[in-house]
Amino acid sequence: MAEKVQIPAKDLSVLINSYMDKHFFDFVNEYRIEKAMEILKDPLQKDLTVLEILYQVGFNSKSSFNTSFKKYTGKTPTDFRKNSF
Image 1 (cartoon, rainbow, N blue to C red):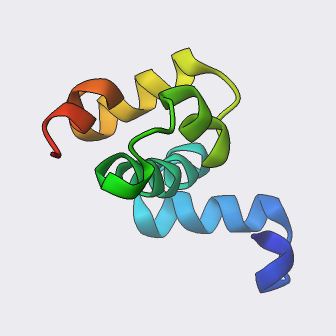
Image 2: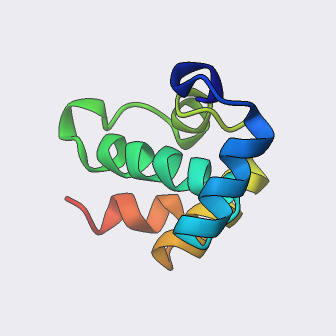
């Protein structure tokens, strides 16, 4: 992202922290969770496992994905998917 806007990563992180009142890590994870939510709600992608989805959106572990997902939505990815259909 820093390369795209052509500023040092540290400066971008400071801007996000200052103006959005969130850490860069949380900022990025929110985008990842939003994409995961789209996939989980999509009936055409219902055969994808949660593991496949978490890798697809950029997470590297199921535990960090589940923790971030629940923090952002209040539900586990599996519960979110069950309530989306």
